[in-house]
Structure formats: structure tokens, C-alpha cells
Length: 420
Image (cartoon, rainbow, N blue to C red; front, side, top):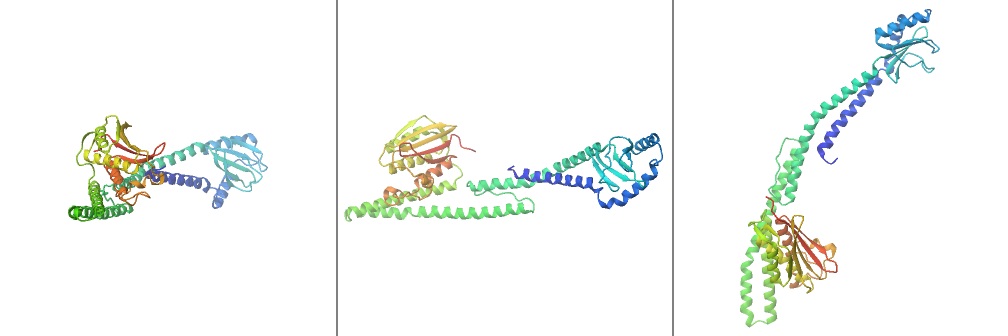
């Protein structure tokens, strides 16, 4: 049972059932405690005066016992001191046993009864004529009580857990990137305090992330001007400086320019809940254009989907450039298909591949596999992170798979229509 409100509800019902069982057992056994010894002696004294005396004939005694049974509405049996039955009426009752030493309450298959030791040594055993009906009535009473508690307890349990469910939904929304997710504070109990604490934490997270994004975007934007000046200086130095130095300087500036461009794009993706410009796109045509630019092969069916063409183009370009950079010079193959109502893009190569332990980490910002962390061929470590951001921005996902025969396969799954 996973739902909390069902667990709370079941706990209520369990308590009621336990209470009923304990109450029933107490009711059933309460009359047989030693505290009733005085009452039993009094009943035995009264019975001695009511039942026929020992000298009466068996026939007369039987008539009197039947009459007394009808008047009291109970089953009666009169036994001699040695346990022999003298007369009985109204149904079966327990017979005296050698272990019986005095008046006491007894239980039989038909229900509770009483065994009275008369003053003359005889036994008068009585049992209520309708114990089963009485037991059924007690069970029905407990069932009605359980039903009333069940009806009354359900809304109480549901009210508490419904607030927890709303809080869980807001926590999931915050974890999914909705930094404005808040939950309504209801009541003054612990759940309300938890909701209030969540709202305060969400506000702090929103301020911290907003500040970080603003600082990152601002710093990236401000880097544009010094990079432009450095590029101009490198061009002016081209005639006087050593060619190797100028080439290295130009390469470093290009790498920094790429880094700034990708940082700005990452900041913009984080700030937008969904694509800015949504239009109908032929994904195969978009892939074919990028493959022609990268000298790669494209195949598949024409797949139309809704999305931001610029973002999707950037995603495809990054995947193709990644395959060319790390594919060891092998041909790059790209394809588009549909599967289960989603567009599926695959970019494959025959390079050394990605170790299984790193197939998730390569999508982390600035992460580069061992052996590719130095030098311009290693990139800046943001390309695949942007691929994942763009895919998730469109409600999709990307993953790195191994390829039979060696190499890597990057698979992107995107919905054909964006959720509103």
C-alpha cells in the first residue's frame, strides 16, 4: 500500500477493529471474574427456593423446570449432586464436571451460561436461549461502528495527505526546473510548516539561480569586446610576429569565442521554460542541411515536428561536430525516424567509442574524457551539454549508446508536438 492516505485510513480502521475485539473479549469474560462470586452465591440461594425440592417426583420436577424455563426464556437443566440429569428444558446446556466446585460462569457452544451449586448439592445450569442472535447483534453493532468511523475518518485522512500530494507536485516541479513553483500554505499544523519551509527554500533557490544566470550571462557578454580587440591585434601582428604564435593566438581566440557563444546559449536556455519560436519543421531536411555542411551522410523518413528551428539546428550541428571530433576520422552517419509517436535522431561513428561509465557524464558541462582534455581538438566541453539542454527544452532526451562493431551512437528522442 503506497498511498499515504490509504495507510492512514487503514490505521483508523485497524484501531476500530482492535477496539472492537478487545471490547468484545472484555464483555465476554467480564462476568466470569472472581468479583462476581457474591452475585453467584446470591443467585444460587434464590434458585434453591425456586426449583422443586429433592423429594418431588421426576415428572413433577420436569413440569416445574419447563415452566421455569419458559418464564425466564433460558435453557435449564437440573442435575443431581453426582451429575445425573434430573430434568431439562429449552435446549442443551453443559453437564456438571468433576472439576466444578462451586457456582461459576460457563461457556458452551451456544454461548455463555451459568452453573449454580444449590444448597442441597444439586446443580442448576442455565444458558440464554438466543446467544447466537445476541452474538450476531454484537457483531452487527461493531460493524456499524466501524462503518461510521470509516466514513468519518476517510475525509480526515484524505485532507492531510492531499496537502502532502500537492507539496510533492510542487517539489517535482521545482526539481524539473520550475523555479517559481510554490505551494499554498493551509492550516497551522506540521504539514503547513513544511509547506512554508518549502516556499522559503524555493525563493532562496530562485534568487541564487537567477543571480548566477545573470552573472554568467553578463560576464559572457562582456567578454565579447576584449575578444574582438585581441582578434584585431592578432591580425595586426600577422606581418611581424612569428606565424606559429599568430596561429596559436587566433586558435585560442576562436576557442574563447566558441565558449562565450555556448555559455550565452546555455544561459538563455535555462531562463526560458519552453522554446521562444515554435514552428513546423521537417527534421530530415534540417539534418540533411547540417550533414551537407559537415560532409556526413543523412538518411531516413521525412518527420515533421513542432520546435525552434535555430535550437534544433544547433543541436544537430553539435552532434555532428562531436562525431567528427571524436570519431577518429571514420564516416559519420545520421538518420531520422519515428518510434512510438516520437522523432528519433541518431548520429553514429566508428571511432573508439565512449566507455560505459562515462556515457552519462559526457553530457555534464565542461566534462571531457581522458585524453581529450588538452588541446583544441578536445573542444570546450559544452557541446553535448547544450545538446541535452536543447532536447529537454523541447520535451525530449538524449543518450549515448554503444554500437555493435565499435563506435558510438547518440540518440535523441523528441515529441512531435510540444506540451502546452
